[in-house]
Length: 342
Image (cartoon, rainbow, N blue to C red; front, side):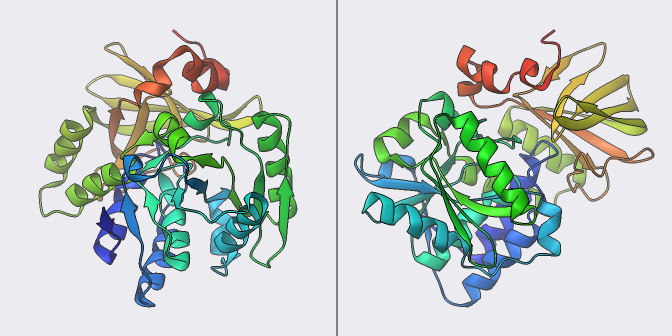
């Protein structure tokens, strides 16, 4: 069990952006919210999934929609309380712990903000181990856990309860409500027991982000930091310069292709996240993690930001083994995004 502190929040914020695979949103706003809440002398702890009792109620908290809108529509801090209380009233039970849906990008810290405000522990686990664009793209989904009942709240205090016949419909309804709420909302879904959590979650994701953040915040030279991250995550890296970026639409997702020149010419296909990296030597594809960082600052470059002329490192890291199953690939494999498997 780890007590959440300013130091751990800053480390998670750094590491979670690396695990976002070019998506998931920058952690800036959720980091500020967590740090401000800590200044109010509120506390929470990060606990292992195995410490959650089998019959305990575990709920999620996440921000849904466009992270860019957060800079214009500032959260009031009560959204997480609103969605959790709505589901607690439904189940007639208090939340034992909060589990992240997405342990990468800004949603690595939104559960911590909720945990601090409500005095509820946060599970060191999540439903992705990286970032994905849709709510059914979780290990909770492939483990048979229902996305609904779901609660949604905006910064004004409006709340909506959703029940759906499938997880895909739950995602569709939540997406529509989020648009009506101005482009982003706070949600709680995938209610589960401790027993279901242990079976379905990707474990130790926040502590993994914390370890990566500790490396990034160290005094080591930039390339040595990346080498340490690759060693820790069993990943690999290469250096290059972005030569060309072409943007297009892939079905319902917007994305594009980037050409990077390094020791060999590399192509990266992206939509909300970086999905495929290929050159003559290798091909890495979703669900594995592909992250691009600025070669000087080591700040992760999102798919919206990538531009010609950038000097970069490409990091590739394996995803959790749950995604390498037939069920996992059916949900988040290349075909899901309209891409060739080969």
